[in-house]
Image 1: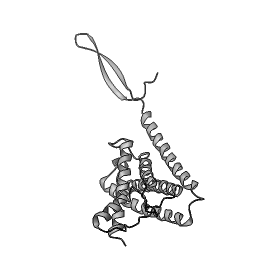
Image 2: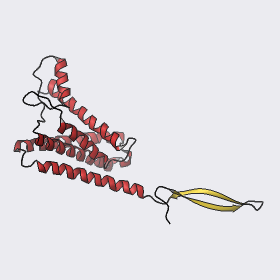
Image 3: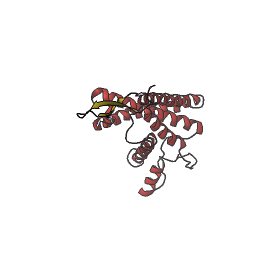
Image 4: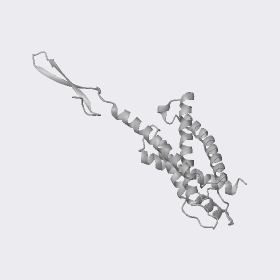
Length: 223
């Protein structure tokens, strides 16, 4: 009977001492079953496929509702975040993160594909939910005066939608998209020091923080 998964098989070796006594030694052998690692790899691929299918379904479900202008904006956003993903991949390449993907062109290619795929999932979820909820995704500069108020307005814009009527509801599409894209990355990203939940929380929060920085740039710099 094969040993249970993850259990090391212990081999007993009997030897005879100089005085004729029989003694026994135990030495751990290599793992006889590596199926847990294989199972994790398959589950990661399955979760990645499910994430892409979900993003695709969200997008297609809004096909009839989204006007041509919104589809153009979606295409531009995908192109923009994909270009930015190449930069993030270069940064990860310099840090050799994750180290399992190695260095050189092959390592950079894997990192670039990972960043682009995660960004596309994020943008698709965000745009699909925004169309369904009739939420704007464009940043609107504050009509207020004073650096403090403008700063607060720009930062809040990462978490609250700026509606035409002046209301600012919680930015559900933006938040779900950020953490949805972050979770999608964990399905193919090698396991690190953090659990999948913690990695999703860190990556999704970082994405929202970057959005706040972009809002600040549009509020104070870009005209």
